[in-house]
Length: 289
Image (cartoon, rainbow, N blue to C red; front, top):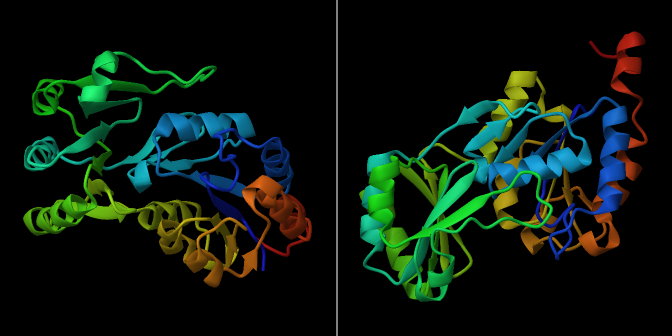
């Protein structure tokens, strides 16, 4: 069995709890890619974040972001994008106006959010992470519905944070009923929802990458941490959980490595992939095509 694709969730694996990319992960990814193995980074966050991490790790392959709604190439070209239609976005935001909640419409390079009282000083101001070569702009507006119409917004995903957990449950049930054919909803924790277009998932996007490159399940290794990683990790023959992973991820893993604080991702990469000869050597020896 020869591994050709290594799919990695960014959060909780190669980025510290403080949000910093681990130096050990950079070095380990270099080792993996020297073997000729393709690396695909997967994140729920925006494209600019995925691109920054890929650049820092010198990963010249595709990345999956926005909960699976966006796939981009190493040259920053869009391979796949599926957005929530403008009219659906408008209707969803209109419905959510009846709840005390924060709503953020996320695009590749910027997001637009409704204004909350504590955010007044941030309205219409760009927010950048220090030293970020691929900045992501967050804008706060008084009237999110007007912004959707004016800018013809079709977000890749919508984040909703409710003040009251019971509102999250009620809103989820109602939205599923009203927009059954147009959107997918997932609850994150007790008070958060994220919304994507119908058919969008990390599973579908990773499957797309595998089919495009003609990788079979027997050639894929996956590493994740959260419950929402379980779906796409099922596409791999080897599933790796971090020491800090959710219990369900550990129960479904073939390997539990060390925690992110203990450089578990780098340890796993060095230990697992050192056993495999480089892809080009295996082709030369006619072990693989």
